[in-house]
Image (cartoon, rainbow, N blue to C red; front, side, top):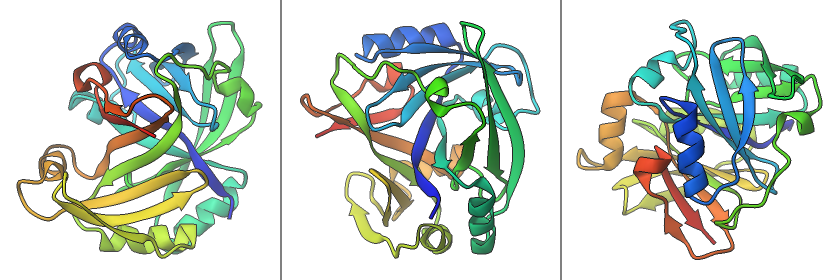
Length: 255
């Protein structure tokens, strides 16, 4: 199996300077990433487990961008990427499981002028934002990921991403096929939701569906549709939940 782990999680902000300021205040070391030719620019929060959080904002209008519409709906935690060492093979694995993807080249120019290049396989509707987009680097991955991993809040990696879905059955079938796991049944009282957990390397992916209309997932599904809802990050400090207004996402720090 070539899908190895979560590569990065994407959090959309209205402007990048606010994102950098707020995440620095939350205790993270934030490194400016540079600009993409598709109209976005980013900053990165890298972790010792090899994954990172991408803070991103549009620096110019681009309604054709796959994230433009979700940005207009408020942004926040919008998408997630998984790392692969065999993009062609993993595309076929997802296709065989019923998930189609579209190939797209990607690049970013860092502040120091270094041009990064990669290839993406992006899931198309109805699987966008429930299936990950896949990335295969053309330039060395270590050039794409920020080298500073130490954070004042002692975060050391990604624990879990929680994905809101209206029903678990269908995505569970294709995730099971892709990851070759049956998945672990879950019930979350705090979300009034049931779901299933999968493992991808050091990371967990949880698909959660609301059990009733009062579940917080119900409001998310009504306004934004299925997709990433929250994340848990590993810390060696005291567990707590980050200020959601600053983080623009539901982020828990866990042991």
